[in-house]
Length: 162
Image 1 (tube, one colour):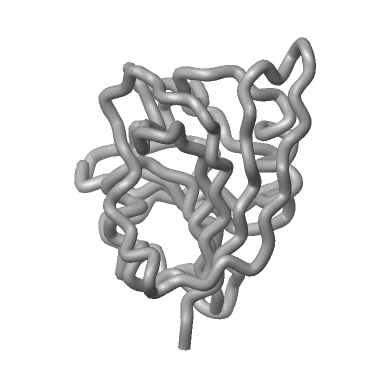
Image 2 (cartoon, helix red, strand yellow; image 1 turned 180 degrees about the vertical axis):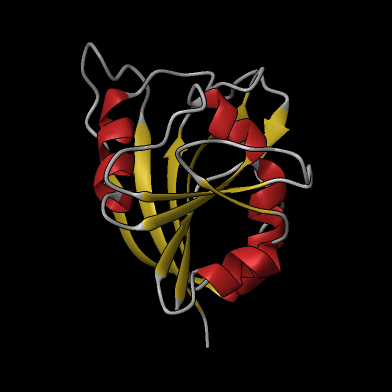
């Protein structure tokens, strides 16, 4: 099993505002899709609801919630990180948010894939603190700005140091 955290954040660590993303960056959305397609994705209930309560297509969608009565039609529900790990044994797992789910999976992660947007954003949700000394930067790709992708951004790929 491998665990990869995938997210985008502003320079100030913001990942969300009012259960939404406070920027529009279509090339990052395309990158996210390519990175998670045909994989198992795991997310918190708020992240699930930010997608309109609909599954991301061509992915196994798993939602973590402490609410034992929470039910959805098109995703699997688990109530703890441990339960999420047990139902995904041997699979490549992409953790896609939110903040609490990232915090719980961070110590278990093998890889981090972050889109760093070179701008500060107003937000109410932040990525948890990362001890970057535990991670090795493997690759860095500068994103292309254009009229639809107005922010400077970089895709960064990290692997946990052994």
